[in-house]
Length: 220
Image 1 (tube, one colour):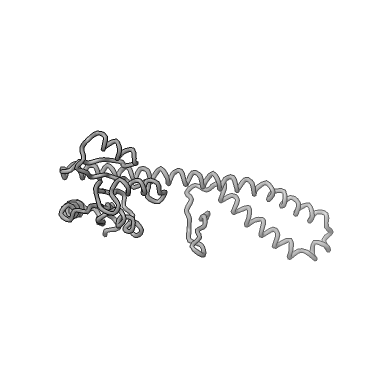
Image 2 (cartoon, helix red, strand yellow):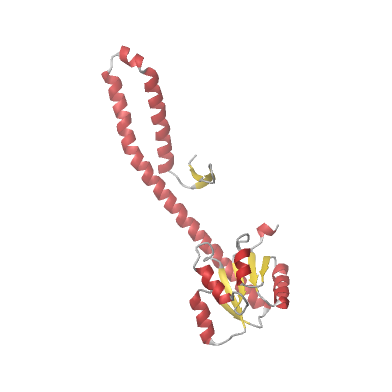
C-alpha cells in the first residue's frame, strides 16, 4: 500500500522533531523516510524516490543548504520539491536558501496545517513537472519515429519498384530459378513497409524491455 502513497523524505538531526514530523506525515497518508543529515539523505535517495524533501538548514556532516545544492545540480534529483526548515527568519537567509535552489522555506516552529499545505503544493508541482516531461518525451519520440519512417520509406519504395522492374525484365524460366529469393525479398520489404507505417502513425509510444537491460520502442 505504501507504493500508492506520495513519498516524503525528512532530513532532520533533532530526534524529537523527526518523531513529530514522521507521526504527522504518516497520519496524513504519506510514505515517509527519515535521515539525520544530508549525507545519510543521499544514501536514502539511492533506494527511495520522494516527491518532496523536508530538510533542516542546520545539521552536522552535511546541512540542508549543502544538500539542496548537491541535489539541484543532479539530473536524477533536481525535480524533487525541496523545502528548507529553519529557525532563521531574516530575509537574507530566505533569499540565500531560494538562490541555492530550494523550492520553499518554512520557519520553525512550524504550524502543522501550513506544513501539510506546503507539502500538498509540492506534490502537485512535482506531478505537473513529471507530466510535462512525459509529454515532451513522447512528442520527441513520435517526431523521431516519423522522421525515421519517412527516411526509410523513400528508399524502400525505390527498392520495391526495382524488384518489380527486374521481374518484368526476366523471362518466365529465369524468374522460376530465383523465385524463392524473390519471395524472401518481397516478404522482407513488406515487413519493413509495415514497420515504417507503424512508425509514421505512432500515437502512444511505449518502451518495453529488450535484452541486457536495454529497452525498445513498442510499435504494434
